[in-house]
Image (tube, rainbow, N blue to C red):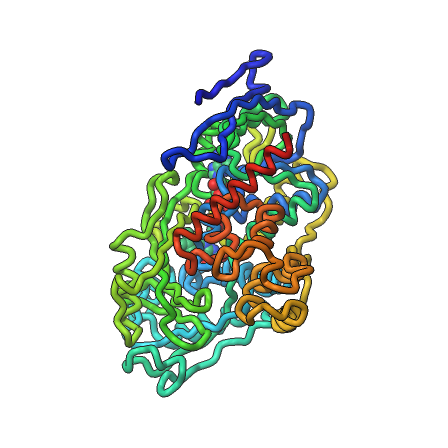
Length: 567
Ligand SMILES: Cc1cc2nc3c(=O)[nH]c(=O)nc-3n(C[C@H](O)[C@H](O)[C@H](O)COP(=O)(O)OP(=O)(O)OC[C@H]3O[C@@H](n4cnc5c(N)ncnc54)[C@H](O)[C@@H]3O)c2cc1C
């Protein structure tokens, strides 16, 4: 069916158009209904945030908690881009020490435990085993490598063990650890950590960092922002924004219905991740010289490669590093790569070359030689790094840069770079800049405040699992643990009243039930099956395609019924 746009009052005050029906014909979605929608023009909000990745949602949460009125628009699902494609570590970034990124590393190290306490369900401590061998090499353009090459020319390009030990000493002591254990030296001969590795490795260092479920982190920030008054709009693309005196006039389009709305805001936040540059130059047409450098990183997933629960930190002969991490119980995650990526709209995918690079890298360490047939899944994301003019993608800074432009009237804050690990501090820094435009903004508040479901002690997961199984004896240990790890104390609400598995409604497979999907749709912005199986969970690793399709049909039908009931 056709779409129809109306112009009212000679500007884009209003708009309207079509609604996509839930029915599919010949596998294609069909536009069958027309609907006219009028957007509100009366409300002026303080902040309009573009982008529902970790940085947009983190800023929205912090701002809403300080009493600002906030609207956030995400053109797809929350965390659909970089923030669901990370290596999922709250880490200081051991390798950044070689680039002398001391500010970033220190801030990130301190954040690990602050974040762990605020979300003990989706984040947990991990031990990293770093096997050492005399062949270890530096990335040639690190500052440490250059310095060492000048002071000790015979060491040029080498990464000696004393240097690693020094780096780990700094790593242990720069960030005020209380929960995480420090570094220790480990024998690989006859130990579980040495078992999957080749015989040439005899010694390793073991240090701490943390795991985090990245996509769930984003959703929980969005939920908390909403609970504090923010409006979160998903599948809503910002088409344009222009200044009108002291306000931003922002035009959005709902991706599924085509409905266009305009919004008025006192300040704009551009947290578009890989699209930050496109938004600056295309969507809001700023005359800015700031640039973003897009660096793709890919991961491969194999069936579980070893029996213990520690990660490996492997150093390559090219000076790069990769991780091998226990993943989702039955799998191992290996990554990442660093490749230039020219266009944010080109979906990042792990190329065969990147897959082979990761396999070859891992094969320099693991006893068992991996082949492409071992790879069960891959994913890829684009790092939106601030362009600091570094030679290589690996060397480009991972620190964040916040730039405010208020030259043409209402201010806009552009967000470049950042890590999942530093999102809360990035939001605080953003609010510092935003505060210059909103007098009397309250002080920072997010440190020590739990995210939804995270209101229990760091070591309280086992107790929650036991409690859940006591209340719902039909739950297996793995099922109960999955619920606690995903939802924390909210798992009790999702399962409340269920005496049997049948009480949880339709069984979609792999312990995913109707009760959980309803929760995800009603409280966590999930609309499609892929939101549920690849971002709110990773059950896509266990569900066959037909099951995922059935889930998608069920979710569509439920949405259709809800829309009909609302009309
Ligand atoms: C391979 C890889 C591994 C990483 N590993 C780690 C790690 O282990 N630990 C760590 O701390 N960090 C890690 N990072 C870094 C971290 O993932 C990113 O810094 C972070 O996710 C960036 O978040 P963001 O919100 O800026 O961007 P994104 O998550 O990409 O969010 C931007 C959002 O803006 C939306 N958007 C864009 N344009 C519009 C528009 N016009 N209208 C509406 N919405 C729009 C997009 O759809 C997108 O969802 C990794 C990154 C990569 C790529």
